[in-house]
Length: 484
Ligand code: H79
Image 1 (cartoon, protein in one colour):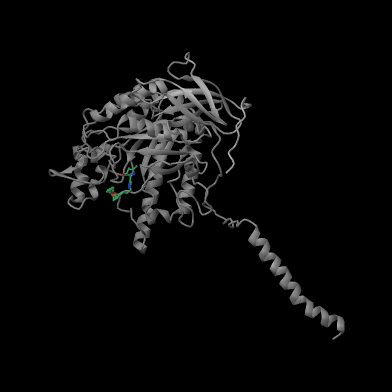
Image 2: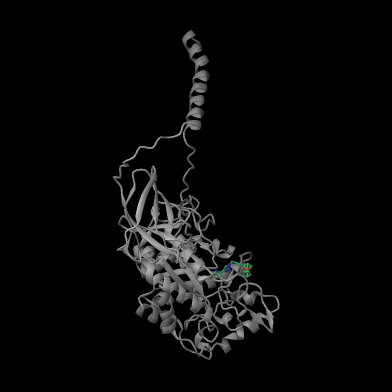
């Protein structure tokens, strides 16, 4: 071997070590970027849907949820005993034979059902959309599905419930979303998990049944704006990434613009809501059930809605109506908070077995509606104001304008509302929403901080102060920073 070659052989390992060393250093310095997984059945869109249907959804602010089905007949009570779980889950209670529960179909005769009255209640409350249970976990269909006998058609009532509801809400200008539970305790093919060949065969039949029912619903009620899926967490369904993805695409083709949330399907790794790359599946996040985000970072820039019960956890009618019952004040505050964080708030109603809405819910709808009549401008078509919660309450902003609303839930006893704004943003005008002619005194108290004065000691209800911002604001004062 020549001398040169020998030297090269000695240098190569050193060179390799140098390159390797540099690679490690480069990797250490660069932000750790997780490798993107190639997904066939992950999210098919990154970021918010920009179309008109979704813009409308985003502007709803307040919605109504209706949970109605056979469970409304026992209303959380069986043979004089109270069931402590959610009333719509009573079939799963140990003391109740499943066949006895299923035979409630022969008692379904809601003589006081009045679709127009329900829609009028929602309208009066100020709801812009309604989500209605077409089928809950018990499998009972409120529409005359041709794919099962377990429907209204075979009850003493005989008639479709969904059609008059869709018509009444449509007529009231309230958009309808159809709730559908994939979990179905009544269907012989449904399984929690698929463990055997027999399970697999049974579940294949169930999948076809589910597809048939969804196509049936969208065909019978073509004005429905969306589908709200539930009961999709069982292992059996989570394993159906390809089927569910294809079905979702089929439904979207059938009804262009339809809105489907994050709860319908999992990706091929079984990830739900957010796929294996962390991207939201579906058009909006459905993870906010009986809870609210605290801050804007919690919603990851996605559309979302919060669905909320009035008692702690009762969706279907429960006679007992026990525990803490949320007041109109609390529900209004949740609405304000939702909108301030870019979401919608949906309050649940559980009508009685006879079809009437319970008086407590009617009262809440009235109180919320009375508030909305004065203040809904700060709720409808509003968005995150890029201003976070302050001591007195929440900010919202009219989408596409610089009009900001302060939704006040706590009043300072001196009537001075401390408002902290980002640098270079000032307030050019402030007025009570209910009395825009009254211009409120604005005092600059330090850099980007103001007092808005509003002596409103008689306020018994949350109220709104509106203001316009001035983004070229130059303070006329100099503030010296403390040195510490
Ligand atoms: O339709 C409403 C609920 O019935 C449904 N989603 C909302 C919109 C829902 N199904 N399951 N879950 C929510 C979560 C599971 C809760 C359970 Fe339980 C805990 C089932 C059994 C224990 C709550 C407590 C229901 C029964 C007892």
